Length: 399
Image 1: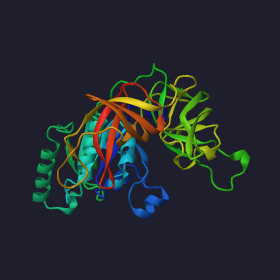
Image 2: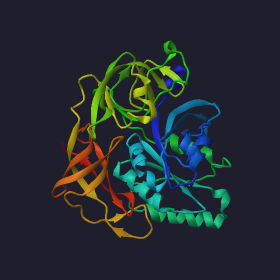
Image 3: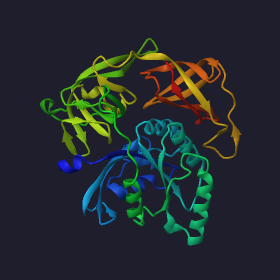
Image 4: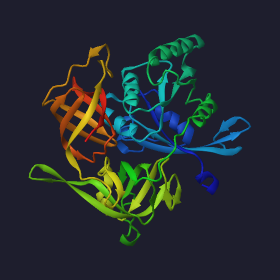
């Protein structure tokens, strides 16, 4: 990755939509990387964890390509969020790390329950830059594709995606991919805050060492995610909260961690420092045992002494949908009640909170997993309905 490319505008895009509508195939077509690399994902054929991939878009006399023809225009990192109804929590944590979204709708199947739920999740997380991909057009007639396009327009009316471009493609056959690249290149990127203290959201954590590697050659634990604001540099001393969990006397105890950044990776390139933009991975001096199998996913990182104490109580200003999305038919969202347990998505943290107090639109929760509560952060709210977590509203942290 050249210096010219490293200085490109960067954007983080989530790829969302119903199961089997072609999200992972689209990412594979764009990046050459199959994002379902987790063994259980490969076995089940669905995205369980968040899959990552990246690319550089080039422009050559108005033609957008991935073949390094012309000049590099934009560096894009993608997050492949799960479309299965039972994996809504993972999708919500992915939505916390993106600047824009591609909503994939298969032309041969149309709008499904998780299509609706994912659009509402984007709305809850206030993702305004949305591109709608009408995939699998090679499997339908022209008339069917046009009818499906009409239904998509009706579906997004009066939502954040009302004016989103709808691009017909075939990810499998590579049809119209250049038009999708053009649309991605036209997404407006907001100014990044480099002056505030750094806030890094951990979406994945890894042990990257091969079994049997000699101890002197071991790499420290690796954390993947997005830097929301500020700057991080190699050598920075950082703090990780809530940190490592340990079960004691049938209770989970969380211990914040401090360590140093050993290296920073953007795509396949090592860099000395990063500002807000695409997804990155940070190698630390932590024992890799501490970061294996996503054990630190959901944590927040900053330089030492910046983050507030972790808390198991939170007050949010909440807004609820009129109906439940993610299932067939129309079901009204019933009013929440004290002592009810709801799932909360705060940045990349997923926790369950018991409703302690309701005052107009303000709701106070006791949490079973503590969080780093940053005032103004967005919260997704889900309720257990017929055995599944369903998104019912969203909110903003007050304290």
